[in-house]
Length: 353
Image 1 (cartoon, rainbow, N blue to C red):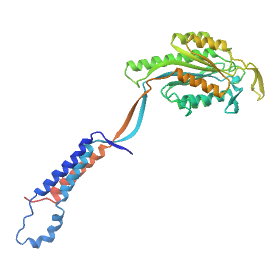
Image 2 (tube, one colour; image 1 turned 45 degrees about the vertical axis):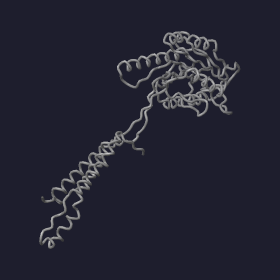
Image 3 (tube, one colour; image 1 turned 120 degrees about the horizontal axis):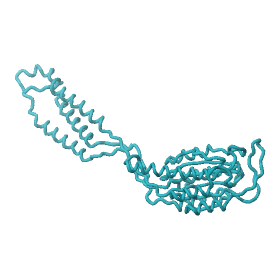
Image 4 (spheres, helix red, strand yellow; image 1 turned 90 degrees about the vertical axis):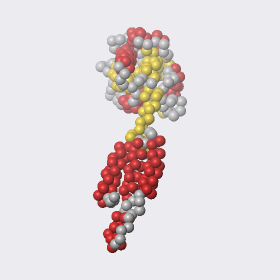
């Protein structure tokens, strides 16, 4: 446990106190010897030998008080308050087609599972190319036939990762079946817009942590085409563009062949592996974003690296060290010692003039 002193100069008072006590001790006149005092020597010897005790206690009082004035503190932690960051809304397709196989580190996993694992590395870092997005606000929306907000925009990325890991594939049948890309994008854009307005209100009122949104982005991951919902992807992209939100679209798979997905009865269902790249390119371009295609986990990881390069934050955070004050017990101890010194010098070891 590391200890620091807020006013270390006060420790010099300990030396001054010892000097004053020493001067006081040597200025005390020797005891007066009276005729016949030898008969009382046995009775007075204890008090004579303890005559130094009040001064010693007084020295302790001044020393402890000096340490208290120096304000000893112990480090309890460090708080990092983000000053500037990116507001990122992750939008993940969980439709049944995301159950198709995809390569992850030499193994075959469901596409949704690969997306979740690489997302964790993107947000928290993998110790290699991906450094994590520690200073950013991140939210999570998942969709199939309709869109759901799983996590609002937060700094606690572990929560986002945990909620993403709990996401399951939607059944292919209605009402959850289908791919509502437009609804999901519109929901993501509105969440980003609301978060920006809320942060601005807190900033104007000087409440809450200081945080400035450098840019607002949506990262859309889907392996299909829009076929459900009330809002078209182009309409959602128009909203995003008006609100200054960029859409980064990532097509998962899309080989043009046939893949097999889990069916309701446990059997595998063959479907065409098709990504509507034309629409994804159009909505990304309209908002100033980009489109990529990911055929495996490695290419998805490289896409996130590119997003990292595109969305750099120059001024990341302001660190504040938190200390806990340790002087109150010392101040109380000095008062107790002062009381003991007064009791000794005025009652038990009182000196006569």
